[in-house]
Amino acid sequence: DANGKVSEAAAQEQGFWRQVKGTYFFSAGVGAWSTMMKVNADGSFTADFHDSDRGVTGDGYPNGSRSIASGTGKFTYTKRNDDGSFSMTCDQKAFHQNGTIGDVTIEDGVRVETVDGIYGLTPCGTFTVYPAGYATGSLNEDVRTWILNATGETPPSTLNGPLIVNDSDKSTFLYDQN
Image (cartoon, rainbow, N blue to C red; front, side, top):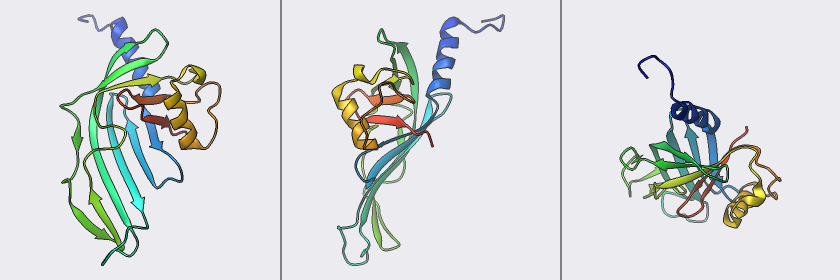
């Protein structure tokens, strides 16, 4: 306000972003594909997707193929939900995918193609954040399955770090504690 005081709502939002900022990953299996996302303290983010397939080879690319997509965007804080999770929205106007879809290069014998969509973030709509300490038994079964697929382990009883879940398809980004 005019006196330099932060409103309760602004303070709550600042605290939210302090909890959420960090690096997240969305992946399954042996890591042939993943999306890495870095969320900043203002809600802006960068993301990089890759999907490698050593079995898809051809003339000039004996070492396989890789699909890639990267981009930037911004989340906006929406509200705290009754269950202790938070809602945020991906700003459609701020979401931008880098490169030209369909571009192909050969790098170190690997065919690299820029594909449409950053897996896990597209569509850029609403997301739910489950904070560290949230009871995993209260999570949607699809979300618990993504945790198991990404880590190879049954989820602990409470989250060690925040989760970001795309509400459209339950793509689950785990906080990278490394």
